Image (cartoon, rainbow, N blue to C red; front, side, top):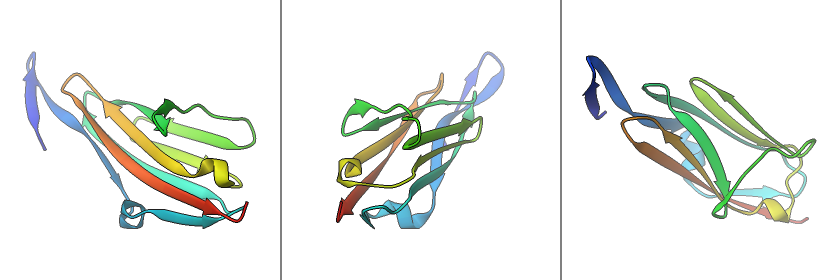
Length: 110
C-alpha cells in the first residue's frame, strides 16, 4: 500500500477488494440478479463512483441500486437483461490518488 504524510497524518492510496470470482468476466442468464460487492479502503476515506461502458452510472428505481458506506460499495441489478451487458468500473478516490476496478458482465437470453 502506498502511504503519504499529509500534514502529520498518514494517508493511504485507495484500495478496492472483492471476491476473486468477480475478477473474471461474469456470464448471466436473463432475469438473474447481478451483485458486485466491494470493500473500500484508504486514508482519508475515499469517495466512490461507478461508470457503465464509460458513462456515469446512477441508481434506477426498482432496477439498479448502488449502496455505499465508508468502507464498501455494492452494485445490484435485480433482474439482469441484455442492456446490463458491458463494462462496470468502480473508482475510489481520495487526496492521495485514485484506483479503479473493472467488472465485465454478459447477460444472455433476454
